[in-house]
Length: 213
Image (cartoon, rainbow, N blue to C red; front, top):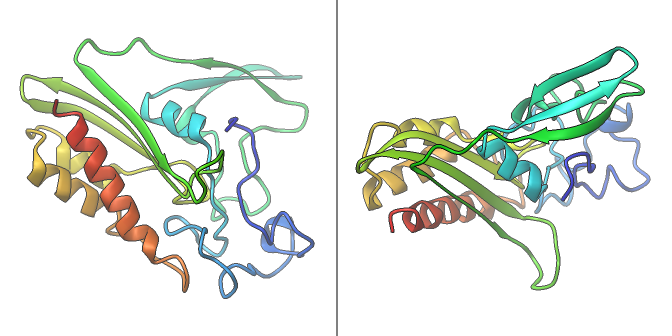
């Protein structure tokens, strides 16, 4: 998915006058919310499913923005806007600004990375849950960890609690399980999307263990 795609919500994309459109109600909160956010909702539970942006957040990329006022650079993880900061904005782009470039840092020599998503259909589909990892090792220990999630929140979500569980520790079954649990520790599922908690835990744990080989 491209970086500037709209978040996913059938109420927002339908004919409902929801919060994201300037209304007063998030219809997903008590409605059909099986694919909606479990993190970062804050009154609006729209979800961002971008595969590309998720990987770029994990890789600590930056995006270049051009507009009438000139050029500016923003970290990929700060490009999308949480509902609690502004219900009506999806990205930091101002009027007449466009995204013109993606800047990727050179990967550290001992970095291992991956991206995997779970989707509802076997054919092309958006991420119900996605996980991007970028781990830098020093010997058998994780020196730096970046974990980003798609399909979890209204923006691409940095799982910082999970990163903390891995940093300065060896990557093994125990630390992978603890990191996966930490990633979902603050999740607040809605009526129909509680399954996402275990889905994300399993996805994160499996992907971490793949990086041990």
